[in-house]
Image (cartoon, rainbow, N blue to C red; front, side, top):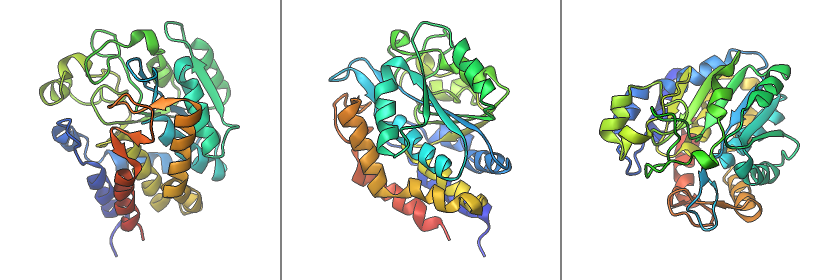
Length: 298
């Protein structure tokens, strides 16, 4: 019988598919991160999970949150809620409407959303997470500060005016941390040598995030990282498995993304256009990856 580790490693290999960003060296350095993250989270009987997401696209039409990130967070929030786990989400005020729309599309509109204004302290949210007993912080496609302290998008542009200091929430503890990213500028990429991103990713010297995570999951598209984490956890926690498989339903994925785009609104982070795409790819393309992941599961 194929071991669970081998299956999870096969799933990780599926999401280690470069979409044109020069991520292969990053994938090599982050290999094993999916199993490490899933197994650490699965060891806790009833983790209390805080999700961080939201990546604002100021040059979008209209300026809005990126589709990658909040849609994945909503899928995981649905699975965690259904499994009986406590979950809440933190994002920027400018990404809050899209995040709430994604959660509503996933059927978990009741999940608490902590919205932080760019430029202001996040101490109140840190206190709220501590009072709520959060034990795991999970960042999904969440832009973080580069070496100069400024968050930058994939084009190297400073987006400080649109980005709250949620990296401070991520590192405030006492929670453990997992991060999912796909371009080098996301929270968690500080776990890797800065030179690795600088040498291989466009504008890498300028954008490389310096914030590390206990566990880093690198993916060609961050949305795939959520698929992979849900699948890996379903292997390791049979009591959660049925609920986690909800995340792997293409129909739900479409509903979540449609709600986010319609009611947020939200835009594609690559094209800047409002539409049901993630990183310039239609959901059909993402669902090819999803089907490969599901095909690995027993």
